[in-house]
Figure 1 (cartoon, one colour):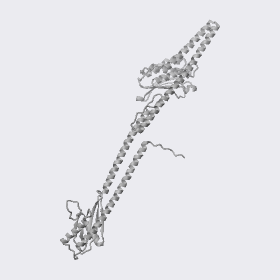
Figure 2: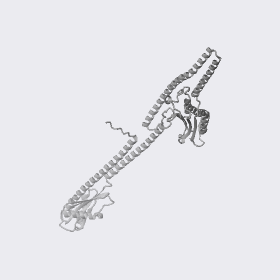
Figure 3: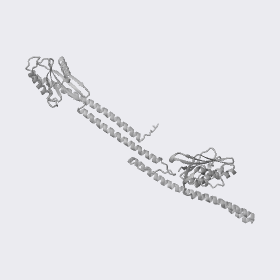
Figure 4: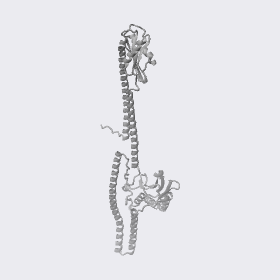
Length: 494
């Protein structure tokens, strides 16, 4: 079973790409933070090793000072100086590590911080960590084993190491201490650099994609508006303007080329249709003229053969009737083929419809047909720029066509209305009747020349109505109706 294809727009795909970029940025940030945490732990671990090594180094160095001493609980000034020198030498190659010698009885008896980066040598025991130093030394003295302490905080980790001293000084321990700045070390700087680069790339990508999506959507909207704009009667595609986007412009060029080919094909089709229409028109004209001519010839031949003056007079009357018929046919043909451009002027539409109904009142009365006029759909005093004479002729043709088909006691209705607002407003002129409707044989193309359902009709009235409507940039339509026929002239409201 084939899987359904789900359409996805380019905009949705780019949005999904943007979300994936944000997700990857979040994952990368998490990895950077984890890497930083691991790097900080490694840094603290390395510092612990250095502190422990420095503590052992103090034990080794002070052994030379205490080797010749007798067991004592009091450490005099000279011994303190020697011990301080030994501690300084022991810590000289341990950057950032400070330490000294501690006794249970006197506390700190020696202290040194040879790698201190201040303005001068540091000789004072750090008071803030004094209790921690006393505690770690007490632990080492109690267990007689090295003791360690790690005290982390938000910005640094405090590391302490204490080692028991073997020698004549009772209750003595060596201790070392270091502070590791976790927010100023190499790992922290790498983390900041990584986050800065990540933020720059994500923000830059988001801005780039956002700008691209906005511009792309704008180009698509403009193309849609151009394609949706009102077209000519032939339905030609408009010439699309370039967007400035190479990918879209290739599509625009392809559409414009296809539109040009379509216009050429339509032109050839129109030319061929015109030739075919001329052929059909010629055949129809020949047929319409041949029948009256045949009738006139027959009447004339019979009159000549009989020699009866009365019969000759009747033949002349018949000839005149057929000449009038041919003259009317030629007049309609000229009206169809030589339609002049409309001369527009503001016209009172309601008065125009009333005048058309009034013109045909007598004929309607003779046929016992009622004429009704409806102009309620027009604004009061509505005036439209049209060629009033041509539009009146179109209405007359529609009303005469209705009167020729509606039975006795029927109704012919003329209506005018405005639909739409602003520049899209339209004028609708409607003529409907209660007759039998348009015959099925010509219903598909009722406006073609010589398409008629009456034996005595020329089939040019509706064709003339169509030409007048098109000359006004409008159209005429045969509307669907359950009773009779309804024709609607649709013109722009200017």
